[in-house]
Amino acid sequence: MSDALSHNLTDPAGAALPFFLLFMLIEMFAIRHEAVHDEAAPHQGQVKGYLKQDTRASLLMGLGSIAFSLVFRTSAFLLYTAIYANFAIWHLSSTNPWTWVGVIIGVDLLFYSYHRFAHRVRLGWAGHQAHHSSVYFNLSTALRQKWNQWFEVVVWLPLPFIGVPPWMIYFTFSLNLIWQFHLHTEKIEKFPRWWEFIFNTPSHHRVHHGSDPIYLDRNYAGILIIWDRMFRSFQPELQRPTYGLTVPVDTYNVFALQYGEYQRIWRDVTRAGRMRDRLGYVFGPPGWAPPGPR
Image (cartoon, rainbow, N blue to C red; front, side, top):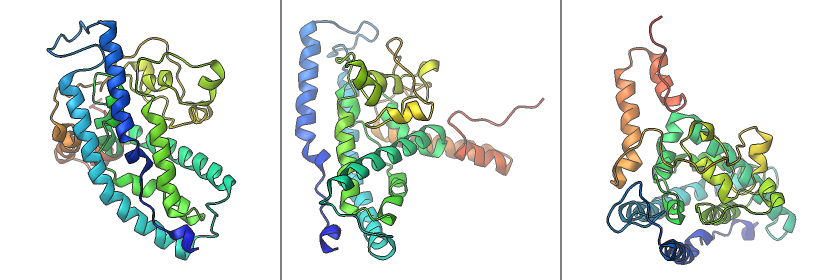
């Protein structure tokens, strides 16, 4: 019991940060070595796949996310520990390999559910859209994380109730995030078919970041793409996506990127005349608007 409750907030994703930066530099060097410049946006200091201002914004959002996660994760850990100690139906052993298999799969399924919610409910999208705001797709995009992590406190709540040691929840989620880092690149085309069928890959995740109509709200997976296949949200990559939001934000201000959608929600809610319209602007899908007069 005491071993299961031992608080280890050591974050594997945080420990992996130097390697993330190293692989970013390798990717950038590989792109420079090709000597191919992006003709669509000929800015100074830009190479294909990277833009200095965009990368700076991604890194700043990553640093901010680390700071906010310390607050959210510490608070959530205390909550999960109380649930685990007082309400868990049993206590799973962290030394049992099958516990790890079950928790990895369970966390991945809950991540899929949360990720789908974050795309289909505007309040969730307001926090998540910052990650999708770049029109570039490279390894720095993986670090372009949200600061508003309130819903992640809720999404893992079932796990301590069924006896998952609280420290395992965030340790396993960090492993999930480490996996997702390599998905944010155009330098990897496709893996063997069997791998592409089971796992989330750069090809699948490029689709997820696409703003093309055929790619919208597809491929929510973290590690296992089988969730998208099972729940009919899978879309293969047919051509290179157009990255970014359907309505471009046209800014590198990290505060505007993180909180701008909340401001737009507030504007729409205060302008709405009916309660059901106010609720629609908050809990409807992104882009929802009340039907016009007939």
